[in-house]
Each structure stands twice: as structure tokens, then as C-alpha cells.
Length: 146
Image (cartoon, rainbow, N blue to C red):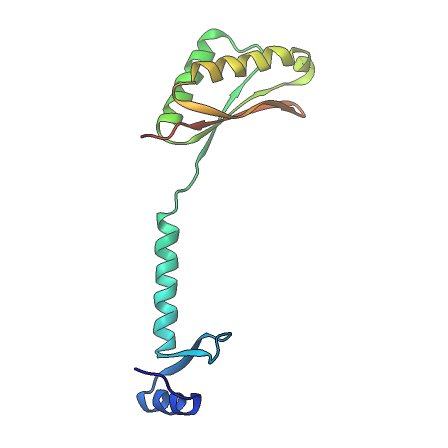
């Protein structure tokens, strides 16, 4: 359109039955635009929704072990872990210590480190095994596909 004094811009916006919206109030002189404000808000919401839809959602899958998990159960759970990492989900593997089994915390750590080393080609350890109360937790993130 052009550059107009504020009074003239207000008159033009009323004549066109549109809104005079201040775009940059700190500029000298302030920058305003004549637009349909409701349409502008609608377009803005639509853009935000589209951006939100494109954002990737992080899925965290959990696998629970006991400190004395036998080999067959371990292999079974490892196959699930491989599937989760291939699908692009983060993996939270933890050993849950029930009752007095907390005395086997070194066995739990060995179990988690074994899992991490066997899943090395599929995922990267994000957090090493850490004891929190009765749980020893480790996070593995999937390796990005190139």
C-alpha cells in the first residue's frame, strides 16, 4: 500500500472494514498493517498446529529385569529391546530389587551393562546404570538412521 500517518491509516482501515494491526511498535515510526485480524489469528493457529504435527514424539519403552534373571528370559527381553530400538523408541531398562535382593546390585549392574554391549549396534547408552531406591535404571537411545 504505502506509508501513511496513523490517522490516515485508521481511516483507510475503517473504509476497507479491516483492522489496523501494529506489527512492530518499537520501530520509529511504528509499523502497522491493515489486515483481517481474525483471519490472521486463524492462519497463525493453523501454522502452529502444522509445526506441532511435524515435531517428533519421543516414545519410551520399558523393560524390567530381576537381579537373577535367567538366560532364556534375558534373551526374550533382549529381542523386545531390539525391536523397540529398531522402531525408533528410547529404551528404559531397569532391574527391580525386591526385598533383600538389593544385595545383588552388582549382578543387576552386570546384567544392564551386558544388555548395553549387546545392543551397541542398534542404540547408544544415554545414561549408564544408576541405582535409585530399589531400581537400577539405564537409558538407551536408538542410533539415528543415515
